[in-house]
Length: 61
Image (cartoon, rainbow, N blue to C red):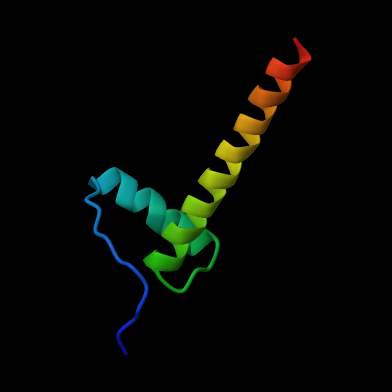
């Protein structure tokens, strides 16, 4: 069944693909897409937290 969600393609080296597969199996994701989406979510959350800390430090000056 086709999806209405946007799609895009990325190219990875073997090392990065292996890291995604390792994460997938360690965390029992059904497929690479789910694992990759979770890694993106985690990375974006970490970035947001880092930006909040940076903004907080600037306002403390």
